[in-house]
Image (cartoon, rainbow, N blue to C red):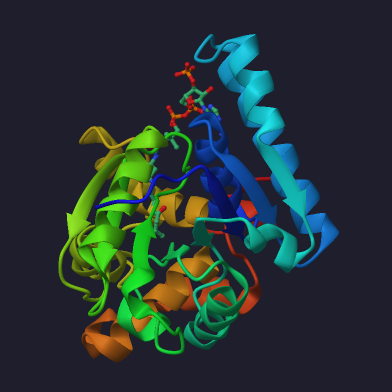
Length: 285
Ligand code: CAA
């Protein structure tokens, strides 16, 4: 059995949340996009509109599809309004376990009892995130990649109590959003993609930390192997604070070797967080 989903809520209108909302409205879903302040909501909505225009100009969507997508989007600052009719809720807030646990408790209380609650965490335990939710069988990981609108892959992660129905519904919803979902049957740090990336990152960043080569030179080599972005460029793109938090988490739950690298730590300490602040390993201004 699986549920038919038509109404979703997205909690958090940042880099990931606005992209998830955009993919959902393009998939024909009614979307309530919630954030805690008006600036964040306005910024998220502007990014969605700009991206829709871009897709329209490239003839990837028609004028009709653009208008329909826009009419499916309902930005709101009212948590209750966002959740009251949702049958599926996407959480896309910062990677702080305590914050996610509190939010999931609230989502569980405010959303309909049958609504599925999904976290976009990139490496945290779904089981832990679900800790204070009443019916934990409806909590699932649905991990998108940045930029959501262009990246097809999505990891659908089973927590220790996630039901088969929840997994199947999340999987089918990703298909509806024109994504390519993969099932991750065991809740473990970094799931598949970031579990693979974590050790690779340690080796790449050790080369820069040791002064053997500059980030730009290492990136040039990576790009010459056909990757669209270099390692340091991609970290800048994702946000160095996000990468840093993810390394800290991996250090705690996997192995001390996953600690943030020296150069990454220096950038974060200086507030150079990559593209979003205009400066990271590269100058984005
Ligand atoms: N909306 C709509 N279209 C967009 C867009 C947007 N927001 N951004 C770019 N595009 C379009 C461009 O107009 C362009 O279209 P055409 O090919 O028709 O001209 C196309 O997408 C490609 O864009 P660009 O030419 O600007 O740049 P690109 O070729 O380098 O592609 C990219 C951009 C898809 C981001 C590519 O660089 C890429 O794949 N980078 C790697 C991304 C990646 O690995 N992400 C995962 C990060 S990890 C993560 O997210 C999760 C985590 O766990 C922390």
